[in-house]
Length: 299
Ligand code: C5P
Image (cartoon, rainbow, N blue to C red; front, side, top):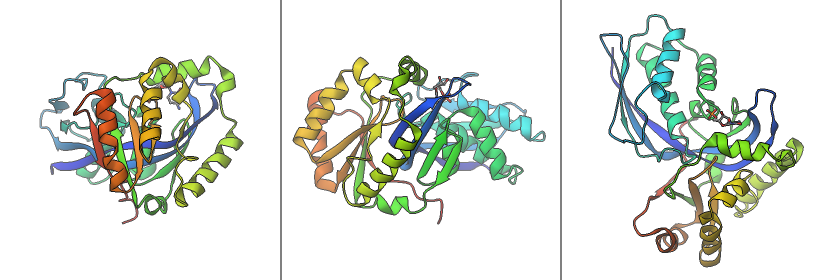
């Protein structure tokens, strides 16, 4: 059986509205998500002793039962009885706990790799179901391009023309150096039920935002309903975003439940004006990466 080497992309939520709470305790979302060229590398090969093993040099990645790659392997074997054990080698670049979907993307990349190695015993809809079990952010990683996500994250609509809408924009990612618990952020939001955006309004705002973005104005699209919760606890966002808006021609946003930020720049000059502002506020040489939107889905 072959060994596979796959990229495991990061993502950003360009638009994230939380439209209500579900009976299962999760939240209803409406989000425009861009998978990115920047990501981790995952090498997957079958083992002969039936055991799964994960090798990763990054100490921030959990190695035991809680690791989503190992969970994905257990789940995959429940669906494909003849599946062997797998050896996973993860080269980590995506900062964990940053809202860049690193763990979720790794889990889905592992699912896809195991399935490919065994000659695709599972159909796309079966992979989608397994991805949904693994986490709300997982199903979107089965599409290799921009998507609109609804429900808890399990309803994914491909946006084939959206990657071309992003052409001409440079995206930079920032890891401010702390991680945020997703469950905590949603819990805080749930404490004030008035903070949900009615779903009809969110849909209209997404449509208007997408239109404005195509016209060159990212302002109406870049939005995150968890932003206020994050801004109240982590004061750096207000200062950082104010300075960036005052000093550069860049739109800042928070991805997922944070802590990661993204910056949309119209061209390379705007992108290069960002580094000095970030270095000044967070210290020199921090994690600030330039990347592009991944668009492999319809090639
Ligand atoms: O699904 P995932 O494991 O990524 O979610 C982590 C936590 O974030 C959940 O346990 C839940 O508390 C919260 N969450 C939510 N609504 C969502 C996604 C996540 O309330 N749509």
